Image 1 (cartoon, chains in turn orange, yellow):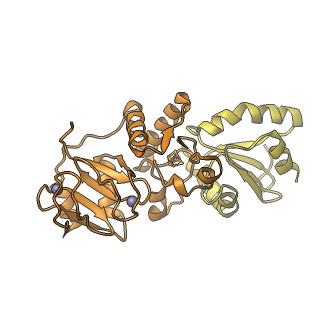
Image 2 (cartoon, rainbow over the protein chains, first blue to last red):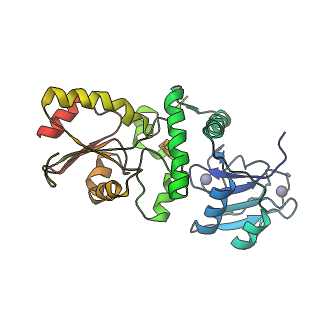
Image 3 (cartoon, protein in one colour):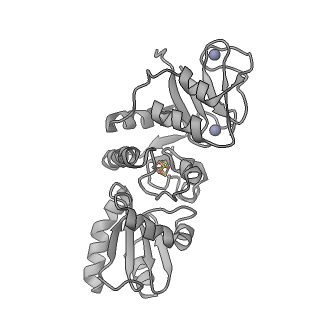
Amino acid sequence: MNTKKRFWRCHVCNDIHFGVKPPEYCPTCGMRNAFVLSDRGEGVRLIQELKGKNVWHCAECRDLHLGAKPLSLCPSCGSKVKYGAMDREEAVRSTGDADSALDTSEEMLKVWDEFAERNGRIKVWDDRESVKQLSVGVLENVKSKGLRYCPCRVTTGDPDKDMKLICPCNFLAQQTWKEYGECWCGLFVKR
Amino acid sequence: MAEEGKRLIWFYGRECPHCKKLHPIVEQWEAQNGISLDKLEVWHDDKNAQLMRKYGEVISAACGGDLGVPAFYNEVTKKAICGARVDAERLTKWAKG
Ligand code: SF4
Ligand SMILES: [Zn+2]
Ligand SMILES: [Zn+2]
């Protein structure tokens, strides 16, 4: 088992967890198995810039969580002591610099497969060629726009709104999900 | 290419799979109808993205809330269609309506 702390992001509400494991239920939106593996670039950017949330930490193992509410069960060490508040910049510093970037298509595909597997209600589109193309788009967007934006939508220029376009986004709220059981780009489909 | 204000525009993304699948369908439709769309890529060309944002209200309504691609905007009628399920029949209605 991997014991390294990594960044995880809730695809529904953009909470960030820095730890060995993400929480089963997101403390902010309540969704189950909603965390997807992220990386340092994205995690730090959200910790610094996402409005309306605070950073909290585990006194036992120093896991961090950016959210609207503190966790009361630490997913990494099992501690039941409520997370304490922490300054955003101090939080960023405490994560060190060890985490490596997810910057290849192979890694993205693996992250998406694992996310869908853990989630249990969704799967990745079986058209691997298109999935690969989407991973290339997402990575190009990181390079040119700084975040893993959806390749099938356009940023508005408003950084707060655009944070909703980080892939995987909250596709559960999309019309295409309700109507056809697929995210806007087709990357994730209902199982 | 039609003059500005009278164009039939297709906004697409280079890495959008639905756009890629639509390319041959659009080309065939263009040939059959003697119509040529202005094809504007929006992720690798900021000017095109800006133009799409300018028509943002109509386009996002057609896309179910966001500025999505593939999106088709008719500068004359100011109508848009959007999404993976655009086909030749809908293109004809959009272009001529
Ligand atoms: S619509 Fe699909 S591909 Fe686009 S950001 Fe959401 S999950 Fe990712
Ligand atoms: Zn959440
Ligand atoms: Zn802990």
